[in-house]
Length: 135
Image (cartoon, rainbow, N blue to C red; front, top):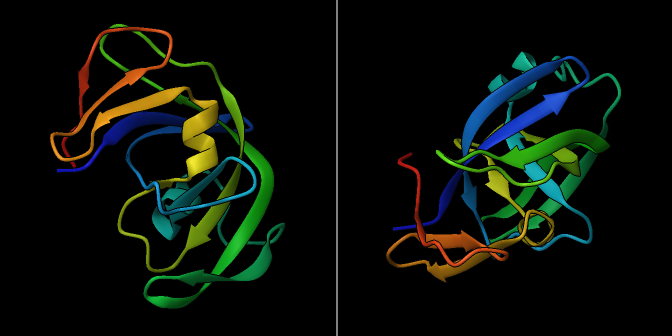
């Protein structure tokens, strides 16, 4: 199992709720969220007129993507709580099949993973264990 979280992504006046995978291997110097072209279209980020093209090194090899610095406000939504909003870079990937949360975004959202194998997590400021969202 993995840790997946319900996120609200807000860009200007548009927002969407998505289930995103927490990827501890997605190392980034700033809070970053990788999204699909479909998500980018919903948020009016596609076609990428304001973004700059980047090539990211991934486990699967180089990935051509589009980078929007400091573009979205992101927060976690749960059944009984929510995180603070975090200003986040958006990366649009033509191969993404689900949104991916970077290590620095996880840090800023105050996520503490208790068990990747069982999909258990909590906010750092609470004791309550939470289960991963279904994909």
